[in-house]
Length: 180
Image (cartoon, rainbow, N blue to C red; front, side):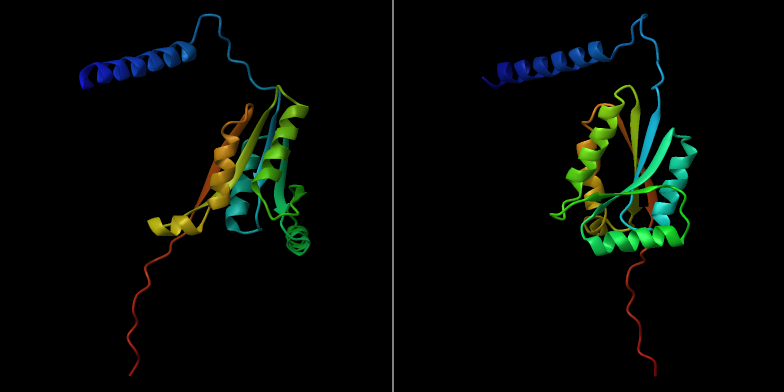
């Protein structure tokens, strides 16, 4: 009884792979067309070294438009970021998206969709600065919003998502001996 069931399952998996291969095959009529323009959006939570690296990477892409986007979970935090942005003379425009319910993912998705809707032949590249931690358990403490946003953006047509890693060296806490 198990053998026919296993055979049917394996055959279904094979058909799935064959359909995917047919769908992805390059034909003689395919021409690689370049998108009309590249709109780059750098997600920003605060102005720190990972943000600076992500902005530098975004500029290296030579985009048609470049802007930094942050989600204001509180007016005070948004104003503090604007002030710091201006005081450091960051030349990339900063757009602040409102989020009255402290939700970060939905405003970013809505904004990226609106950029793509306004120019459907263009590509929107979302650049996300991310921490790379040295211990597996530290991953739980960092990048959760970035992971949620990336997971949701992967299903958006015309959107490319790029992570810019920033390694954080967090050595294990060593016990210190008391001084005598």
